[in-house]
Amino acid sequence: MTTDMEREITPEDDSFRYHERPDDPFWNESGLFGFMIPERKIDGYFYVWHRPNMNLTSAGVALWDDKGMETHNCLYSEWFHFNPMAPDTDMFDFELGNGMRCKTIEPLKQYRLGYTSDTYALDLLWTGAYQPPNLHYSGEHGFDIYGGVHYEQLGTVTGTITLHGETIPVDCHHFRDHSRGLRPGPAHNLPGGGFDFAWASERTSFAVTSARPDPRAPVSARSIDQVSYGHLTKDGITAHVVDGTREVLDREVDGRPRKVALHLIDELGREMHAESEVQNCLKWHSIWHMQWCLASWDVDGESGWGENQDWFDIDVIRAHQRQALGSR
Image (cartoon, rainbow, N blue to C red):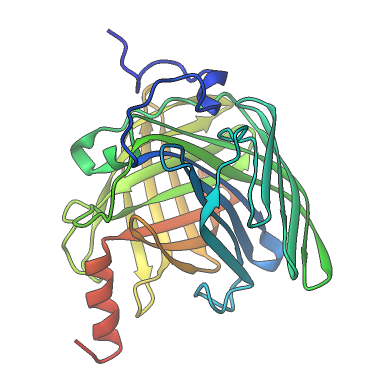
């Protein structure tokens, strides 16, 4: 029997109007779009958590470079938890009171993103590069917190952002995702690990999630993380990743990654090796404490750009950073 995590992703999955959901208030429909301006070491996100049973959307945008690492000193950060949902709100079709708006042009393929505030605005066209695969994660590594359905997709992003009166063109490759299911909180004792992606060319890319084998191990402990799920494109053919490892080769004193290495094996038996150098970091806490980093990549000898999202359970990273500050 085909399960919800094994079936093909369909256009109806880009909506929350075509599937049943329980009455639980913690039912979650979340979606993330990313973009970057690598020549200026800028990374950014457009992120929504719809809670349809609560009739609200928690959502925000952020923009950061290699100068500020906190939400209060990065280029821009705004998040509002209590946007009321309009009657016609859908997963990727909405206008929020905090200035965010999204329109689906073609499900699973193309989206128009917008945001307006006094100091920051964006107008972006996000176009998927391929059909998003259904990701076969399991509860073994704790990623069932995403819910019953989760898919990720790489694509092209074009348009502009305007920051303090300066209009900056955007022309890059980045990723998006969508998760659906129960997501109560707060969450503790999570595995840590990371999400990493890279785009080198239409023939070479990957997006994978990994888990630390010992989620309570200190930040400074050497860890060979186990790849839990994801997909890669090699020689133009996309397939699920079924095995692999992730290792942070070097860290800053506060725990930020400097370099990351991946070894991936897909369902066709093909291997891929990739190494990154981190270019910036935003310290961001949600389910995990996330060190959200723009990264330059070498993927099987091809140069590209992407991200290292380095995750820790909040208690683990708090203990490490307070020790680094000379406190307990």
